[in-house]
Image (tube, rainbow, N blue to C red; front, side):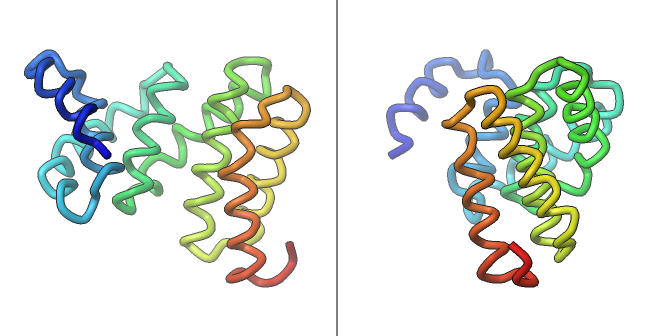
Length: 151
């Protein structure tokens, strides 16, 4: 499935953006390819404190989600959510909320998980982002099956 994508990355060689390289390895096949990417991902985490680009914060969060490092992104993801609440990047805020819900789910923090899911789904409905609903719907379903049964 990744052969065509990997071929393009191979052509790019050293011009491949660092974050794209890390995401490919953490999302694509974390069990086998993430170990070589972990050092690079870990090196990006301190920069989240001053990162202003909501899209970059969310993309780093996505890479972290596949290798159990979302806790390192919480503060930055909440900044993305706050930016969206203030009228900023709504799509990024939705993605950040679902990443925070994912983090809460795996930490067993059901109230935090459910609140983030519901806020994200509400934003999807309010702004017409139907495609972005799927992670929230998925997490709400998992919470129903495995959580405390309140959903």
